[in-house]
Image (cartoon, rainbow, N blue to C red; front, side):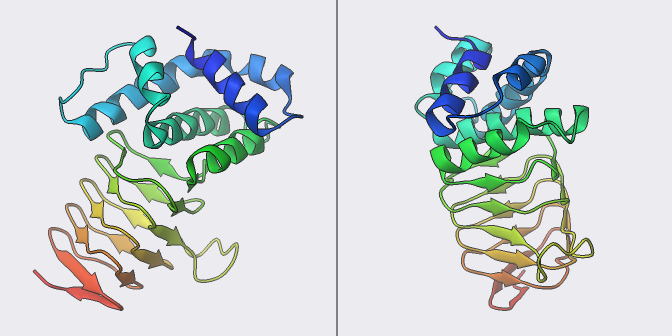
Amino acid sequence: MISAIEYIQFCLKASSMDYPESSLREVTHLIDTAVTQTITDASQKLQNKLSINSEEELIALVQVEPTIEAVLFYRLERQLFIYDAGNSLLPHLASAMRRRTGMEIYYSTAIGEGFNVQHGFGIVIGPRFSIGKNFTIHQGVTLGQKRTNSPVDTITIGDNVTIYANATLLGNITIGDNAVIGANSVVLKDVEANAVYAGAPAVRLK
C-alpha cells in the first residue's frame, strides 16, 4: 500500500511533468494533518457506511472516489498555503486536482471540518471565501465573484449548509447556518439561517 505522499507524488507526475520535486519534499510534514482532516471529511460523507481510520484506508478509498481525492488535495493545499503562501508547488497541486477530478477548490478559501462533496464534477469554489463545518456541495455548483479578482466579493457560509446541483452563488453574500440552496438556484443576496432558498434569483421557500 502506498503512502499519502507517494500518492500525491504519483498524481503530480501524471498531471505535471515539471512540478518542483524539491518543494514536495518540503511539505511532507504537512501531509499528516491533511490526512487527518480528510478522514474526518470522508466520515461525514460516508455516514458510517464505511469506517476510515487510517492513512492506508483513506488512500485505498481515494483511488476509487474522486470526490475524496479532491478534498485530500484541497486539505494539503490549504495547509501549504497557510505554511508558505508563495510555495511553487501550490499551482501544480491545484492543477492536478482540476485535471484529475474536474473540481476547482481554491486553497485561499477556508473550509471547516466535515467537508462533504457528494458529486464533484464541475464544482468551482472561488478564492478568499469562508465556509463553516459540515458543508455539503453537489455537482456543478459555482461559488464565485461578480467581478473578476474582486477582493470585495467574499462569500461567507455558516455551518451545516447544503447546496444542491448546479446552483450559482455570486458576490459579497452571507449564507446562514443550516441553510439549504435548491438545485439550479442563482443566489445574489444573503440567505437567512435555517431556511430553504430556490429559484433564479433565489427566494426563501420555507
